[in-house]
Length: 323
Image (cartoon, rainbow, N blue to C red; front, side, top):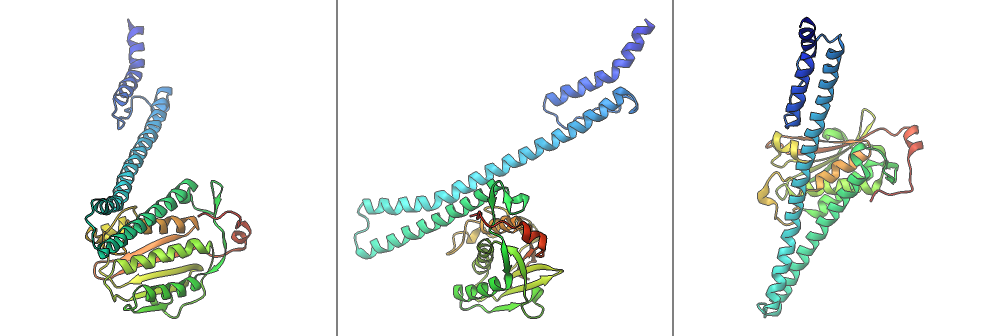
């Protein structure tokens, strides 16, 4: 009897572990094995190892759930955005087939609307393909070599892109005052060397300029800053628009996110993918994109690229473009 009691007492911690495993098997991943024994004993060490494993499993399941939720939201948003122009095109073609467009002017206007919707659909599909290629290449891991897809890295002066961006602002909206300055609006624009894919960076700058033009009132001044800060190449696109709240700024780079849904169908407005592409391309260059904004104080998007070193130049590969 004494031996039986001793054995039962010794197995009691294992029974607690069994109960915990049963609860976890029922779906409660938050369960942990209690301190059932001295951690210096075999059973105590077993409980510690199991708790560590359970923590990793819970984290993995949470990450998987979040990823699946993002994917479902992405598919739903993409489907909605693709459906809108398709419905418009189908509606206009149905009107034509029904004979509702009798006058030549009506036909011409309808064809212009169809062409506009088709152009919008083409832009959306191209943006989705760009993000798909970046995701497939693992752009979030950063670097020119991602799954066999490489950037065409070469020494680039960000000042050249800044000057072209200045001309783009004036061409898109001649009513705006556009200024070219140094970083943070201090001093004159300066040489800003970077090891980058110029075509990819031009897409980054084009998206940022388009974002500033589309989401600020006509005539709003735009500043383009370029130079170096602590050896890093810096290029800024700043506006004096209404700015964003803290919550909006945190979500600004999410796919299909728009700070103001009421203007999503305005002329020139995109599907909310431009800033997501900007972040992916900048991260692919080992850089980062920063957003400084506040309600009533406009928004400043700053692209920061690492310094050009001999090692990075030596490792640059030029044979496989990313896009």
